[in-house]
Length: 32
Image (cartoon, rainbow, N blue to C red; front, side, top):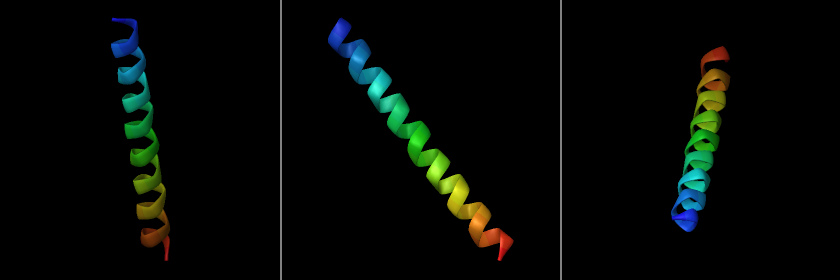
């Protein structure tokens, strides 16, 4: 159960990171 919780938190962090990168890229493209 602990291992699953760790994997879930890692996947969540990865999703947040990728979403943030996409958001930053979209802002940079829109600001040009």
